[in-house]
Length: 400
Image 1 (spheres, rainbow, N blue to C red):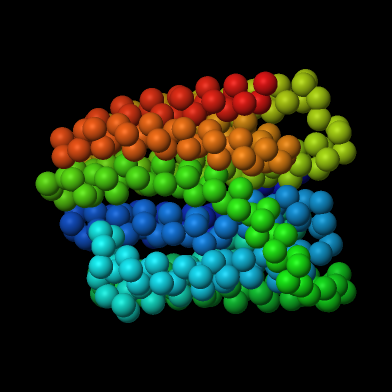
Image 2: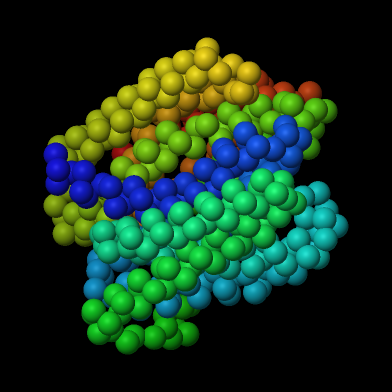
């Protein structure tokens, strides 16, 4: 048991520090800001999530797989992989300036510049984090992540208390930069330990870009699916209350999803290594799938109970509880989808993953377009549940 805790605590701290930190910031802002300000931040973060998934170009997933097979060379891999989002951001910069005159929430060229800077730092952190996960070296970075996390949390609390949501992007950029500094310090020490001085060549970058394209396409579509309901509701809803309620519901769900994600990200390098050496068999896969499903069911039950108790005792503080409970029922199904998606990645079936997600995205877009301005959070929840169930069927069928 002690060994199990020691293996999971470092990766838990790592994922909470990188992926969970924005969620914690938004939860804290929910209790500090007005509903209108909170709804605006949730909409902005949904747009940022899609943008971030686009610019990383599948590099984090690629990083986990490469680091799992080349543990001693993660600094060299970091130099190569971090170049991918820099190339994508450079190429895509004009698109962000065009977006200034369109629908999204960027109101000035300064905002676009801030988002671009944020994406540079945030994408680098996602890659560094993935390399550490894949190489199973999270224990080396625990102290650095904890220190940077506490510093960033202090900066955020000061900023949100004194400046409300006006300094949200400035605060996010500062926090991501601090994480980058701490990560680079740790990776530099790792370089000295492995004595590896390999540099990224143009040929290697082209290969990585090609490999990352299929991965990125699947993850980008997945990110659009997860964030589109909130963006659609922001566009058509007449009140900030409904956007805030749905935004709060999806925000609550990120915590159980994060717990499930920790297990899957801890398991992925092991599955990749076992698959590479032909150690995986049907019995092992059945046990892993059973664990994924059991974890999803257990977390769903605990989450719904906690939400119910919180709603009873602090009803005036919480919003979006009922939508959150309904969406929580999807957790076991999403866990199974995650399991089958992991098998796709382990077997390099990236194109199949793209096709499955595109089917779900198409169904979601068509449904929302047909509904149009009569869109409500309850209708979106029903459509989203149906699309997730459809995706699970596609994944199961694709893995046969």
